[in-house]
Length: 614
Ligand code: K7E
Ligand code: CUA
Image 1 (tube, protein in one colour):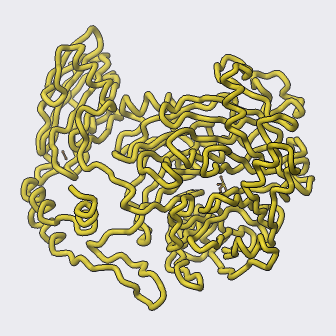
Image 2 (cartoon, rainbow, N blue to C red):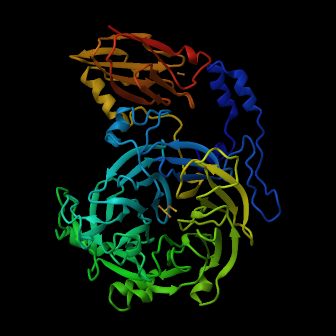
Image 3 (cartoon, rainbow, N blue to C red):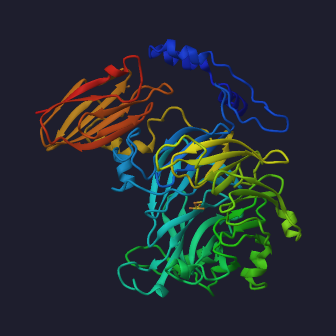
């Protein structure tokens, strides 16, 4: 299929092939209504503005990837409609897919069921997204997860040694190479009870994780607490906004100084010394750690006012913009000067080429394709649009401020984190919604506002209530993301189940329908084709451990099954051609019905059987 054809198919999904599925499922009546949906070509609904309403049957122009905050998940939205398309479980328990129940998810979660995702970024090639992976941090338990974007599933979770509050992350932008992670909280290193009462001995680490293997390559110790992270476009540097230059442990101690830093990490120097074996090991971890505190060759500390929070690289790759948080300024750092600062030719502070005032409480910055920046201003509850070239020329760069509702945290624009920034849509992720929606009890939803930035004036086009609490989001052109509709059944994701089946002489999971006893452990291999499981019953003994392996043998798009075993806390899904398994105990005798929880057929409710425990 040519790229053009595939694009057309995405834009005009073939309703008739969907109808065929409907006929197979005996749902022709219901889906023919969908077949009649009009396909409206998007046009502007107001002269000079983008059209934000996506008509029934039409598709969005962008994928939005949203962190889920303390829900521990990642969400996928369509932009500009802001319709929520999917929730991808990452660090959380999710019954719809069985995340936290299936053996593969348990092997990744290692007994944990919560996380706090703040920053989600996609993998890159040559300064733009390659559509392969998404990466997301867990601030709560110092982890980095990777999501495969061919199937939209979490496939790796890496625990980061010696770190707490893993906060800013950013992948390499030149190629699929590494993901850099900042630990925000300083702790004694190693954190084994010694030095607990001596904050002078605390430290925080900047960690490099291999994007392909997800193994930790190295760590660099810094002064201060690190917040957000960015990488340049050439693969030379990563950087961290850093506060607490005071080295304090109480809030008052941490915010005394007028300037903190942007810390820049020199990858060439770090990797050479790691290779030369100069890294020290801490505790029982084998990861090499270098000392990057003041005076080391690995880092420069660029003074930035005051407790800077976000750092964002403009699409030309020339400027890093640091938002002052406790200072009303943003600091523009010229990456060309960073080379000179590392060579000792200029002072680190000379890398700052502009420091305009943009409002009270600046946090994060997004960019369009016309040299403008958009900074989120928390305390003022505004977005400030300003021009980078004007700022560097020493002129007042502020173009416009727009009120948002209320207390904006992150901000991002379509393709803003790439060299293909296109200046169409801006999303404002607001911490409070107050009076914007029907009240739903004391815990309220957040409010996210979509802003059209394509014209000369910013225009808010709608409010979106969200479940708490997305911090950050990226919006990606839809042609970049090419998800599969059906699993390839030889995918390595099913290795555990495949090897288990082979151990018992079953060489094809798609044909595996058998109960095998191995001492007190019973292995049940089952398949499903709508509307039947391959077994309408199986028998085990009280006290057994059961591993239930289910393969979905339907190969039709959107025909998922699953299995829910009554009273055994087992519930997971299998999409077309997928295999998954769960292991559980059967403590009590009796008859327990299992059934398919995914609506798959007119006889879906009849897709069930009995587990008999004798
Ligand atoms: Cu500003 Cu964790 Cu990105 Cu929240 S951080 S807002
Ligand atoms: Cu299979 Cu419902």
